[in-house]
Structure formats: C-alpha cells, structure tokens
Amino acid sequence: MRCFIMKYFAAMLSAAIFIAIASIGYAQSLADIAAKEKQRREEITETPETITNDEIPEYTGGSVSTATPIEVQSAETDSQESEEDTETADQEMKIDPDEPVDFMGRPESYWRETMTAAHKKVKDLENEANVLILRMNDLQTQFYNIDDGFRRETIQKEIQKTYYEQDLNKENLAKAKDELEDLEKEARKSGALPGWLD
Image (cartoon, rainbow, N blue to C red):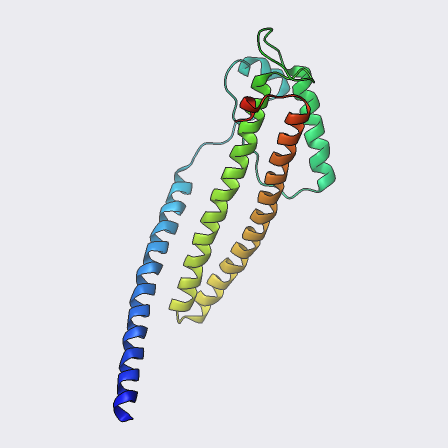
C-alpha cells in the first residue's frame, strides 16, 4: 500500500511540474505576442483623412476602401445613416455608360466597393476579437503570477476593461455580419450579378 501511495505521489508531482513548465512557456509566448501588437499600434502614426462631399469628384475613378470606426449607436441611428449614405451614393455616383447596372441603376463598381468595405469591416472586427483574446490571456497570466496586491488591482481593472471591450466587439461583429447579410440580400433583390459581390 505504501508503495502505491509513493508511486501515486511521484506521478502527481511530475504532472504538476510538467503543467507548471508548460504554462510558463505559454504565458511567455502570449506576452511576446501582446508586446508586439502593442508596439505595432504605437508605430501607427497616420491619421485618417476626411473627405467631404465637395472633394468626392477628385477621388472618383480609383478604387475606394473605407473603414468605419467602432461606435456604439442605436439601431435607429444606424438605419437612418445607412439610408442617407445609400441615397447620397446613388445621387453622386457617376455611371460609366458601358458598365453593367442592377435594376436600381447602381453599377458593378458600386457593389464591388460596398461589398469590399463590408467584408473588410467584418475581418477587422474578427482580428480585433483575436487581439482581445490574447490580451485577456496575458492579463490573466500576469494576475496569477504577481503577489503584489497593488499591481494585482491594476491588472484586475485592465481585465475588466478588456471584458467590456470584448462584449462591445461581439456586438459590433454581430451587427457587421448582419449588415453584410442584408447587403447581400439587397444585392440579389436588385439584380446584382453574383460576380459583383466577391
């Protein structure tokens, strides 16, 4: 019986040592990734350029990529803005006579640019979700590896902030996916060809 207890204790001890070593290695790799992401964000110095309606003719003819900032808005505000954007885009759009159009008169380039922007928004939010997961893992590792109560309190606040950002990201990602789906339905109803939506 004593031999069995000794073997059991030895097995448990070796398993605990293995788990401890593996978690330290995992924590270090997450810390490295989070540090690289932080450094990458600090290196970004570009400020987004705002284009007014008067400047739109200068930018027609080239490819357009738009990125929208993440905001918390009501559903009514979103729907009103999307209707206004659609009406403005329809009014200001200059159609190439040789370019195919849908039933509403919107050309292929409109659908390509709109779908590209919608896909980019979803992809950006998915990337942000991955970064937030890495940040959360890193903060939790730091929290459990530190004995200093003051530092733990600071890290706990960062963890709470990251939880909030994750919730906000989930809402925005769900909304962006719904918008993309609605846009695809609208395109099908208005007669846009499938190749225009890639």
